[in-house]
Amino acid sequence: MPRKPVTFLNTEYKTQGEFENYVKKIIYKDIGICNDIKNTYQEKYYILIKILERHPEFNSKTENMCNIKIVYDTLNKKALKILIIKNDGREVDISWKCAITGKHRSKKHDLMSAMRSSIDSQIHQFRTEHNNDCCQLCGNIERLDVDHNDTKNSAFDELVSNFIKKNNDIEIPDKFGELNDDTHRRRFLEKDTVFKDKWLEYHNEHALLRMLCHTCNISRPKTKNKFVL
Image (cartoon, rainbow, N blue to C red; front, side, top):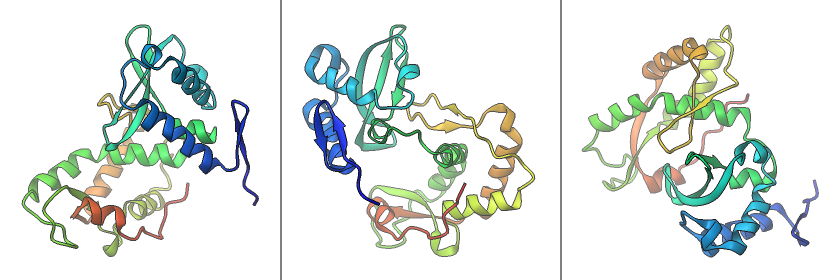
């Protein structure tokens, strides 16, 4: 399939990747961390608004907007995210990556986000119990992550897939709330408590966890047993 060019502010970018590099430069280099883009970077503020207009939920997310800020992503300290500041002081996240593609995050993305956030207590408990462990692959003791051990058929995608197959009589949630812990992750709604509780029980029983240093975790081969929604 031929690559589609992106036209933005009368400039044509040959590929979506080329346009993404342009957007990343605006966010990471031209602006960076900033709590008041509107008054600090007036020209860049206009460009950023035009970028965000490509987001499929731009109108709803920017209703009563008074400013934009860029902050570190709570889940990835090396990444930056954009927050819409409302007139009443509330802050709403808006994905600049979705603005690049012009598409919503997938249903799988939101479901997996809620399923991951719901097991936070189990992950925290494992981390506490294995606080003195080292990386199981290289022996490093710095910046350790809790990893779902894919070498023992316990990759997160595979656990989710097996859980859905086993509980095919339960309706899969398709609407979610948002956590208020600054991560903007999805959470299950009260109407999906049965699904959530069964998932927590399944994960607690079947997940095989291990400690990996961040480098080994992000560089390890990814599971081929992907969950397909």
